[in-house]
Image (cartoon, rainbow, N blue to C red):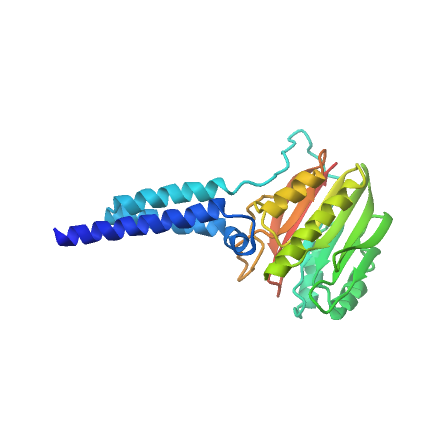
Length: 307
């Protein structure tokens, strides 16, 4: 009898811990540490599902019930401002690729070959060092004659390459980080493309800087009412509150699959979606996919966009 009571006490205690963790994940304020924990909601859901399976096997009713409730609470939070699928649009006027290179990556030839084989009209690169700048401009210039490269040795160098003519190409600043704005001439008319690399929220101050950058980005997008694509490493997951604020304030929506993980890439697999393609109203992603980037800690994205 005493053994049964001890087992029940442990069962109740574990169920309380599970529910406290799930409640914190679901309702914690938009602060630095909760933001980091909420970035891994898919992984938390998997952990709770495993606990549920173990509880059923061990016949632990309290723990099983708590794990099931926790799994539901977490999955409900995987809500992102996703663009509607416009099934009647079968054609695309613009193919865009997103590639975070990883600054110390030395697999230059493989990455360049991959970029060329993507058949993208526009390619956005992040973590462009001086070495990467020289390689990209030398190897891609013939196929992508319209480009702007802003190299940097602090992991925030950026570049945009286009094989379609550009009506405008500007370098703007989000706080202290460059962003490239281009007006791409497509068969269906001009499309505004922003190539962005927001700050990595690795500390409290960096978290505030990233949020401020996304607020400024929304203001840049609002300056013109025209088809717009924002592509890059935004360093926020699709369901994060910073992403919701960006989309609500700019009118953008997540164009690619909201739960497609891109970082950290290890052996071709990744955990969380922080690379994105956002599109304005009236613009849709007809098809999208992620792909392996040799030597990088990110997976790439490619999308066919209709305007």
